[in-house]
Image 1 (cartoon, rainbow, N blue to C red):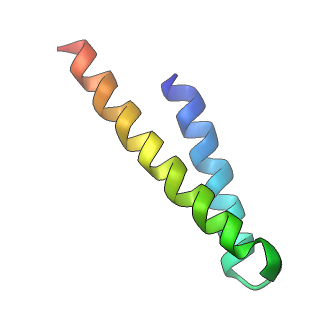
Image 2 (image 1 turned 180 degrees about the vertical axis):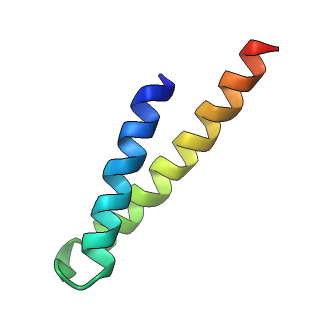
Length: 54
């Protein structure tokens, strides 16, 4: 599950770079939403992975 979250985080970062840089102005708002969603999912998965190990 953590692997999927990291993959989606990387995809969101790439989408954010393309969207924030002005290359795809129409996709900027979608990239921002995806970026924040995947950051939140990454943090939650990271916390859950640490809680399960202890």
